[in-house]
Image (tube, rainbow, N blue to C red):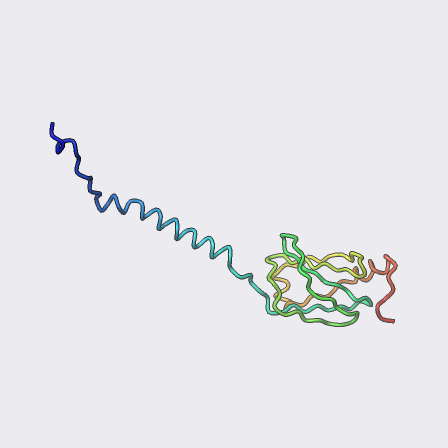
Length: 142
């Protein structure tokens, strides 16, 4: 045998073989791009939420969605109405949480459709005032 017969010529890859890895790689890159853009999207906002406080107490109002994460919304003075602009959309169910002076004064569950129907206006319920009085708080207004 001569040395020439022991050497093999390099195999040439076919065009199909060279592209076989590119298709799954491209699809994976597209899927990852879509997932990342979905994960990094900005949250939806509601233009404004109006809070009406007919009670005799200043009330701190927080809101959460079904995930339970509280968003500090507004401190509303007794007898006043406050408007909060650009509120993160809490989804189909909004939970408004009320407190004063460290006292939990209850919560109000409102469906998103009801909020929209009520022009995004929430009135603090009478039960909030009742709870704060029962906890021994003095009214914020005489």
